[in-house]
Amino acid sequence: MKNNLHTFVVLAYKESKYLEECIKSVLNQKYKSKVVIATTTPNDYITSLVKKYNLEITISSEGHKSIGGDFDFGVSCGNTDLVTVVHQDDIYDYEYSYNMVQAYCKNKDSLILFPHYYEIRGKKKVHKNINLNIKSLLLTPIKITGLGKFKFIKRLILRFGNPICCPAVTFNKNKIPLPLFEYDFKCDVDWHAWETLSKKKGSFTFINKQLMGHRVHDESTTTELIHDRTRTKEDLEMFKRFWPEWLAKFINNFYVKAEKSNEKK
Image (cartoon, rainbow, N blue to C red; front, side):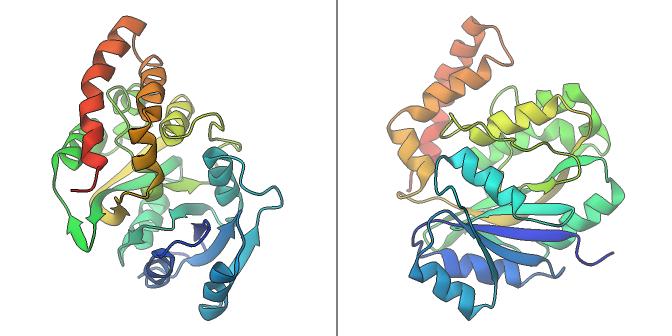
């Protein structure tokens, strides 16, 4: 397996108390990936961690404009074939990048590569709950090796919701277009990106292991957007890309209930 194939780009925003734990997790990898800090909100806290861990930092000249803009900026900061845009609250298991690089070497036609994930609620790692079980079920068609190259399968896994956890995704920079993310979306910016990529030639490569932890807490952007109903509106817009409007509304009414699983229990 070649070196220098993968970069973790850690999106550092303001002053997250979880940032240092996140940095430690991406530095402690079986496959020694490059680690870069990217920020649209430079400050002394971020700078201190950059110096402490001797990391490279890239500061956006345009500042923070949108979530989608930040994600595109993050992808652009990676100069290797593979780039993972890391959300600062999350953690990555020791074998995460090893598995991504290994899967890429077997299928360089991959557009994106991603594993399943677990949730972090407080200090507890949650490997099973209703939300995770539903997402695993939605991903069933792509668990069969080789099916991820077919447009029908790529769109099938997205038709009933977004089962792909954004910070779990590794992008193949040789295959994806930039800009990729929708700047007008606030919550479903990633679902929109996967829907766009599902129409392009190339594979969605799924590694059926829980290899990273996505933190769920009251201050997260997703939780805020659920509370103000932004997510419900954007979910409907996404369902309409796969279904007639009347059916999209019907599905969305049931989907609203699943949003509650993002609330801290």
